[in-house]
Figure 1 (cartoon, rainbow, N blue to C red):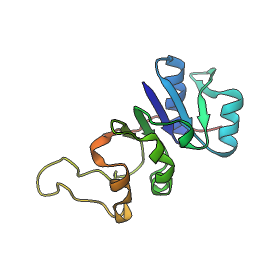
Figure 2: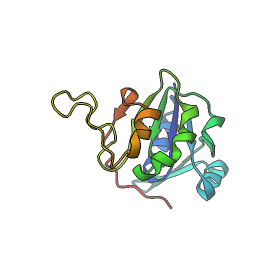
Figure 3: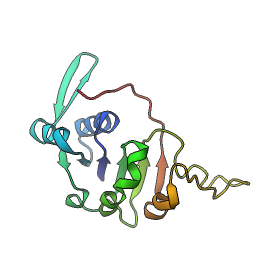
Length: 152
């Protein structure tokens, strides 16, 4: 199973470290800048319950280096999603599922709910419907993000 975490900050880094430690997936992350370089050099460092571990992960600055994935976890801040659509596109194949781990009301919120709000699109979080068109709501797996984590 090929999984890419897109956005390896606090939430994405935590999830990536846990998945890498489990060793059951072909895991990659997309990160940038000094954070990316640190991950490439030393892996992801996780400090939890006073224990420090470091796990190696495949890290890339550009998603096209990774190819089509089975799952893509969007762990970047919601306002960063639209500008990242071109970067995310190479990860998406016909059967790729997208797990959204983002703050706020999601762009796909009313998709598939039935009733009078069915199909309502939230222009405030998806201006012009760009995310809806490029990612598509049918592939989305929603989530709730709760762990109190940070980046050192």
